[in-house]
Image (cartoon, rainbow, N blue to C red; front, side):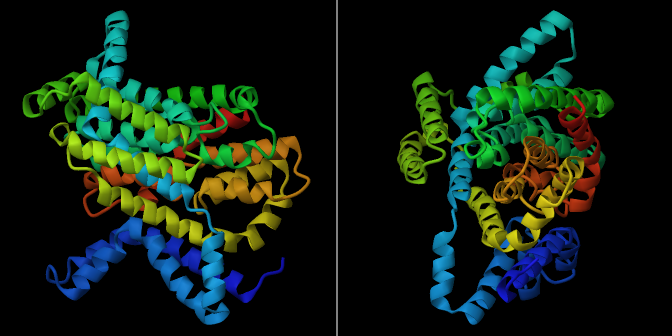
Length: 429
């Protein structure tokens, strides 16, 4: 295992950033010991924002990089990076969080949920939650995982009105795991699969028959288990989608169908061009103009929150190239079962798309090893916020449900059971 000094420093700074994510809750508590708006209060609040963690450490690392390698080398390194995913998530979060898109998604899921309630006589709240947590993540296989995460998280946010710590951590854990595996029905929606599908010649049929049906079973099992276990808490802590519609109908202007249709067309355009940065950014800029024209039917665009999520992912990308020296040899020396287990664990501290990309650079992997790597990466995508890129978007939307900020260790513990279900379905079935 050979490495340069700058590669070693890149791995060290990345490790410090990972440790920092587990300390954000404690840092926010420290901030409260200082007067509001004081220098230390503001500094600690910044350090306690989980979306800013990797950007802060990436900035510090780039200062070290410049001092070691020089300005020219630093610029060349920046130019070699691909920030398409953060840009895409920024655009898709803003569009999916608009009132017309959320209203269309809510009405579609409400229609399906109502039909299920009439046929099976199931409770409205539990049925609504089950349909949201199943259909939302699985739709990520077609509208991309970031879009599915954004829409699903917003619907859950509108339904939750009172929650316990145990309930909200269990809910967000299932959401993260379901979205990570829910995009595995197609070869173009889940980032860990997208990274390797073309190189390994994995087409739609291969993905559906090897990953898709197993992932769909895991999504359904996780959701039903969550809804049944917390059925009493959900009954007292949530309102139905129909109640959400009634509340919004009384306080917001009705949205004309042409306005909704235009928004859905823009959403489709960004999704279709999601792998072509200049194209989807051009469509997004045009969308901002349309959003201004239709301001009467809009809530405030979530530009700040989307930018923070993009900054979080950009910071992770900054470190990606400096993990190859230790990660690629590690992956290459594992047996299939150990590779699967290792991928699940490594995903918790390394974005799963980066993990599969690095794995694709290892020559001579067998078909079984390739499957083990990708299956482990998507199975472990709900263990931490950094495990799967869309997780940051989901947390940004639901962050106010966590007084004092999310505690990564609590999330990790809550995600163990739904992750175990995903592991069983992807490895045993």
